[in-house]
Length: 476
Image (cartoon, rainbow, N blue to C red; front, side, top):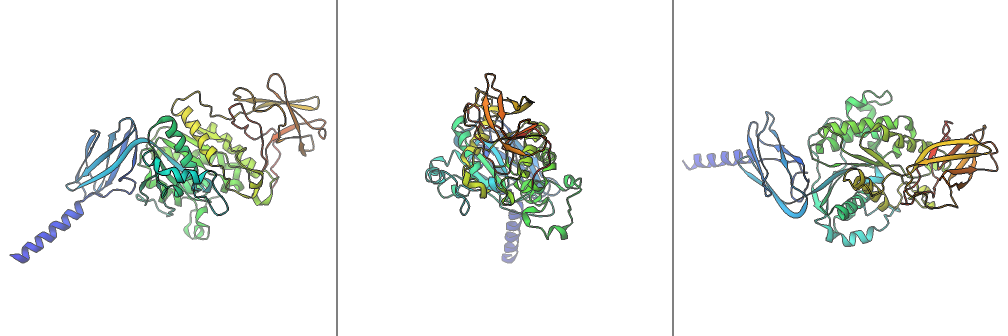
């Protein structure tokens, strides 16, 4: 009898362990849930098992797991706030999630300029990082993040590591600097907690964040594993989508911020189309709709040691054009956010203004703060006559930031050779562009080189987006 009792007790322990609900790492203590939304929670248990979810704010749900043991519920969240909440999940055994906050949740994706943490990289600091890290403990209930580790697979996954952490002086150095400054400004204005899903990989191409079905339509992309194994991990298509993005796609977010493109400079011609397809894919796996997608123009950098070439400028041009192809999207310019010595630094130190500009776009377009300027002025048209180019700029708010000393403009004639140009502004805010070396101009460019810093902006400080009026092939 004693032996039988031990066996039964052992079996009961096994059954209890097997019945205990299992959660993805992103569903746990300290998480931030999207406010005023029907958020998804999910996990695994035994097949055909009833799972009950209850919350401290009163939302409840019940569901039966499927034949594979996976379950998913939706819970309505209240308005955001700093009061800690609790979520209880039970399939017979209870799992209690503590210190949950309700606020705004965004996914920060891309390559190294989004990945770049507050701690910076070797010889690549982040301006203001030490102050942020020193003060981080005061923001522990205002900003939280989950860092998705760099993981790559050739087959789609449903789980990935990465747990939510509160911002502290210990955890702040690992958070994306752009993600931090974005969250900081949103928190300042909205006064609700902000959660960042930090999901990026330095050096990754846009193709790395797309699925097999999308990539099979690209003639220049191979998905044969033996070939992929010979490539650098960051250059492999599909693998980050499978291992890092897809597993977190059930997590309810307000939208996406994106900083990537440097690794696609060599194939700039297809970038706008491929970025738009990536965004459509992301929105589909997040459940449909037009989740906002706000992204960063790649910064000036002397690619291949050649500041004067313009392949990177052509990529920026594609990024600007992508806005028209991607609903509910917007690009912020960074042309003015580098220092002259950073021509050899692909990771500029000013991540604060990058994050703030992304936040201004979200505040204007997602949160309805229409008096917050977010759209940079951009080229509209040019007329050439009498030895000058008359350029009309669209999107000006309050005119320009300067009337003299304007830098970054070039003119060319019929020979296609560009020369530095002088600029004045007439009473109608047209730019009058001239050059003594170009008596009969046929095209005008502004900062259309790999590394060329301009200084023209609108009265809110948003920089004029680089442009060209010609279709000459890029200089490599």
